[in-house]
Image (cartoon, rainbow, N blue to C red; front, side, top):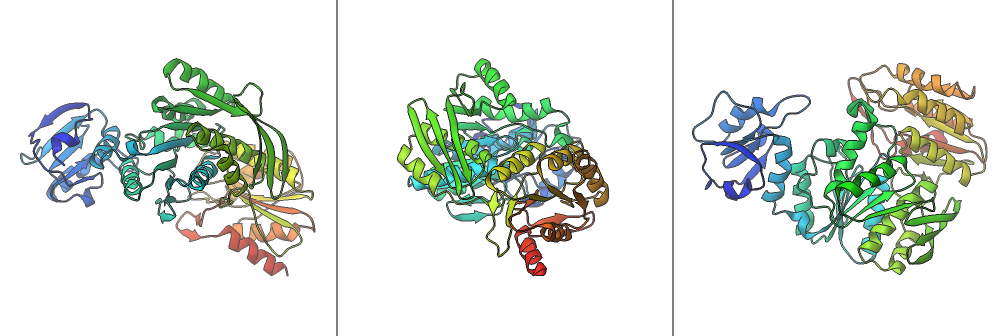
Length: 490
């Protein structure tokens, strides 16, 4: 692609050594990947500054450089393009380089503290039930149809990778894309250049304040998604921040807003919920009448996810009969309200709940579905939002019968310091708690406390397959761990 064509979407401040006829064969932001004919984008990161590596990229053959800082040295054989924000520019460059692939697909972006992963899988299942091949970008994995692509541990990859993945989806004849959009991804402009048809807001509760510093900053990052949506913004109208978002969007955009929830003021309302271990039956009141829905994943929180998915499908023209069939046949999502089939006298539920709101909703749903005591095993991450630790402890103490506080990715912190902070909250509500440093032993101890008819709830890890320690990252699998614990008990 000619350089002049590649940069046409940028707000360019200055160009040195302008050679618009340069043929650019690659866009990179890692200088190690620069080669002859590439364009290197120097972005400012947390650990280092890409401007330090411009010379390295040029030495390896980069034909052009996009930067935001003035440079001391300019190679006369290289074109230098100065912009206000090179990270912002990266997404626009990537989209143009890969042929603006999202413009030829229906794209739904989903943001919120909880529910993003489940929603992407629900939507993918609905549209593929309708015969439309779909892609997914999210926390667990990225999918091109049924093909799994490593997400490199990021819910929302860097903008260059996002566009590369979407191009791969387009080439594989995917007509739809369902994408988790994290607050980090929005704050760091990782979805720049993505053409969103629909935006979904699930909720906003305490999480990631170690990064965003305040709830307002957290909300502002989430809200960025909805300003550029073309067809409809689908908002949880029961959530207080969802209500605030609706008010803002009414002032800032002409895009239709559709609300959902249990409150009668919403456009779509769920009522008459009947929960059990096989799923949830509920009545969905729509602008066109009532529909009886059976969702094959249990839990009230999943009903909220289902409502958002159903609205998106209706707006996109999927027949209601197809939607209902998809809801009834929806496979479980890994580590999301997952009921394990185990050879034990008690039930086991694994869930990714790692914020105060998600933990409370998990425990309330478990209480509605199961009859026995709740034995909860959970912990809080190290190097993350410390304020939520005692809050989650209080929630655990209030809604579980027995609590085992253990580790969950302690990272650089002392595991017992984290556990003590969580336990301080637990003991405000109950004396029925224990602390166990190693998660494997915590799961075993929790299982050993279970009586016939109880339910063992393992919260926080969900789909994750690792335990992040100070000096190493260990393989960890919640499913294998609980099955081994049950085997040991026998």
